[in-house]
Length: 267
Image 1: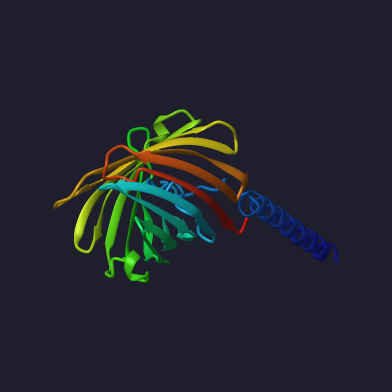
Image 2 (image 1 turned 60 degrees about the horizontal axis):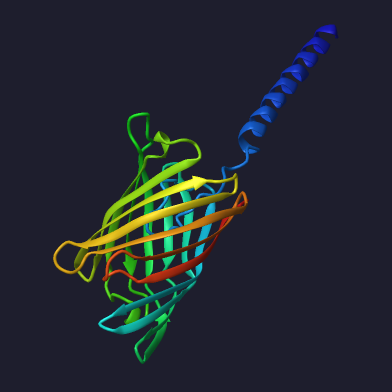
């Protein structure tokens, strides 16, 4: 009888110890809060970060306004709901679906409106980064001609960009992401670049400035621009942003402003 009680007590001790180990593991792993939201909402230069598996993120530029003047003809362009839907697929890979939004366009005395094309793409980790090398990801995909004729290329256009980040070489309050890639539009290729510098002024607010541009591979005009703005992390999974920019040469859009909202699920 005493032996049975001893075995029973040892079993209870082992079960209790196992339960304690599980609770500690669950608190450290399952209960660990996710990192603050990281977005690609700056549009020209994507973030180097990849969304964690099991998470979904909606990033939308719900209002964008552009003005331009070319050959003495002034144009205005409004985009609504330029949206990217990101899905954490694996530790080093995410899947993405994009919709370029709905357009209201005025060029001279002509007005037009309609939806833009869509996009299917992925972001893959190429290098984790170290003291001597930048963290680097690859964003690659293609557009889908779902838009109205006035706002669609009417073809499937591939694109890719390498995104090296040199933030690990900078103070914690600063970061730098870059983008180098090629996009095709109706078989015409353009080399595109972007470099973004950000400054954390508080735990929830980041100010940034970005240079970006496009250089045609075959023929056409170079286009270069600059924008500046800030993001505000209202919650750990919710971010608001606003930015404005202007051209650095004639072929680029003269002025633009954009307001966006991003949410990650689950919180």
